Structure formats: C-alpha cells, structure tokens
Image (cartoon, rainbow, N blue to C red; front, side):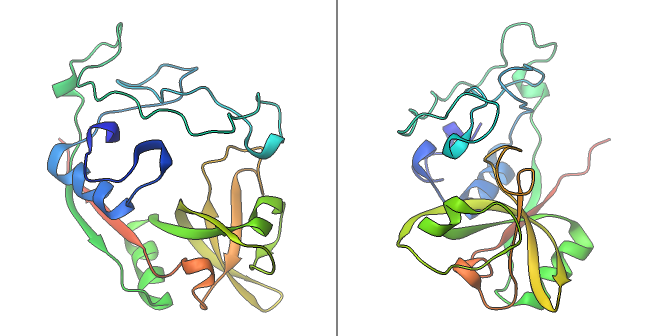
Length: 197
C-alpha cells in the first residue's frame, strides 16, 4: 500500500503522484476496495464520507486522518497471501505538459493522473466547465484525467475526483482545457501495468 511509500509525500496530507507511480513499479501494490465492501487484500482504511457536507454519507472529518500504518499482509479472511496479490507497473513516466501529448496518452493508454491547485471557488463546483474565478488557493489535489471534449465551443478535460459521487457531476468534473487551468496540464503522470498471465 502507499502508506509504505516513504518517498510519496505526506500520507493523508498530500503527496507526489509521480513518486506513487514509481513505488508501484518498484514495490508493487495490492488490491483494495472500499472499507464497507472489504473485497480486496487491503481495503481503503477509512469509511466513505461526504465531502463538503453534501450527500447521503456521513460528513468527512474536518482534519486529516492519520496515515495508516504500513502493513504488508492482507486483511483476515482474504483468500490470498499478500505476496500473491501484488501487482507491478512495467513503467512509470511523466507526460509532457502539452494538450496534444496528454490527449495522445489518453487515447493510446487510457486514464492518467495529475494534480490541480484547489481554490476556494472549486469547493462550490456543481456542474459545468470549471475555471478559477475567485478565492485563494487552499491546497494541491490529485485527480484522474479521463478524457476531453468541447461544449458550446469551450474545450474541457473530463476528470474524476476522489470526493465520492455526491460531489460535482456524480463524482466527476470538467475543467477548462488548453490553458493549464489550475496547473492541470503541468503535472501529468502515468504508467503501464506488467502483463499478467
């Protein structure tokens, strides 16, 4: 699990997506899943919660949770050993910070990861194409970049957030494309899984 990655950053208080991809290549990661479902070797250690007080889940804590202890074993009752559940990347890499390069990677290899500067007005996002207008910067946040499109002549990226389906457009959001809005095009990383037999 990434809680074992001492170069990835600051645990639950943020980190470096590129270092996480490197860790996957070097050390491997095991299957996960939600805390409630307990379907993988190491399910997510925190219950599903509602970010920003919206939705049908209990509200998320106001402070960061402690980073879970690094444990290299599957939860009790899981049918595989930890070492048998490890999956590795064959490579991890940075994507050049150009719109066309990111689109090429998405088209050929699927979703990539990036990070964005989160401003106060992002917390109020519900729908549409987000563009920062007002408010100070609050944090930098990791996201998954899934695709792109155009709506009424405005180019956008399609992204997945980790704030559950109660937030934004069912857990997704769109952000202005081609202008490095909130740094979206600056820190894009990806990797390829090892082939399994």
